[in-house]
Length: 503
Image (cartoon, rainbow, N blue to C red):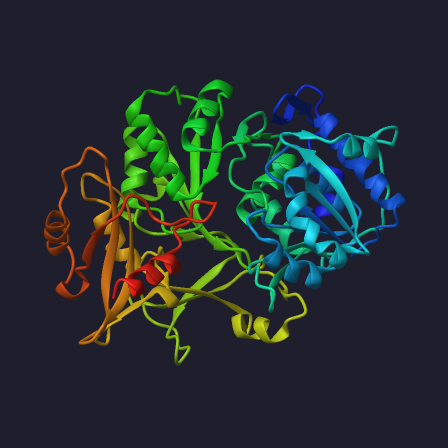
């Protein structure tokens, strides 16, 4: 299988002429990128960081993040990328759990870390970035250090990453991802083939996410340049694509939705785009089709922090399957089971999505009970409801916790949202269940419409009536915007709280 350490040593691009990292006023070639990785690795070894130690990274999307990540993996340390969305309260639980030996952070997060100094007493803190550039402290760690390094060899079962899926102080869950599974995934995805060598990828999606880490690795091993943007708002993304001739990027659907709104206001030259990648939540078919009308290919992937990539849909798989999450990638098996009996269900029936994959995580760090709940007999429970069709395409109908039970009938919010999002004038929607005295729960849709649209609630209801069973027709509430986290994901919990207050 190999390890990430071996891939970095043997297959990391090292061309003098090829751009590797670009952000702010700095651009590094792959030769410089590799040298910086090894120089930082030297520093870490000199500081006594050993194989298996944890190195935390609290940095925005800048050129020093991948350097820190690969340097950590080079010496066999476990990289712990942290969400910069979290509060001090939330970070406290993660830091207590992971006990990093070294922590790299950006200056803008100094205030968040200040109350946590006592929890970091045994951790070396390094201020790595100031805005889009590195600090003098960080650059001093690299200065006059060798550009080649030797470190203890890691095994396939050694941990490469610890990715936290919860920020609560009670019991944060750290997903343990080992070297072997990641190296196998990257090798299977043909990263050593250099098929994308020389292309430019806009790394606007937060780098602490598994999907973005995936692109950092692919970039290093395939010779893809990573471009970083300090303010990844939709209009700034479009300007960057136009100015830097970007070929690819990855974002949540909401980002692409608002990019389209900007594209309607004024034209942008997006002719350099090869493909746009989306995922993380349901990607509306309407969105994919609208980009097609602009001559831009969009692909979508389905996966999770624990499972890595599960399935992919591309236009060449057929537009009749655009509503699906695609087909499982090679070596990944998917089945649908009854959530109560765990029996496999036939094609077309909705149940819980479970997968078997060589890329699945090892478990939650120091939390065997949580691991046992999701890993059973070699199968990982995704926690999503879905179905497989006769051709093996996977359809995700929602999270089990989001399913609305209407008088005994299940309503899957994603299905209703997809219909509403097709209504001309609708920008985006979110469907939740609200308490109902008669049926237990009833569907309600919060809808954002185009500023110039004269769309009414009844217009949307009439549209839904032609396409959905009566019990699935939601109450319509127009909203100026939908609550989102900093990544652009709609926070339905806030909508539920709002609905309860309005009762």
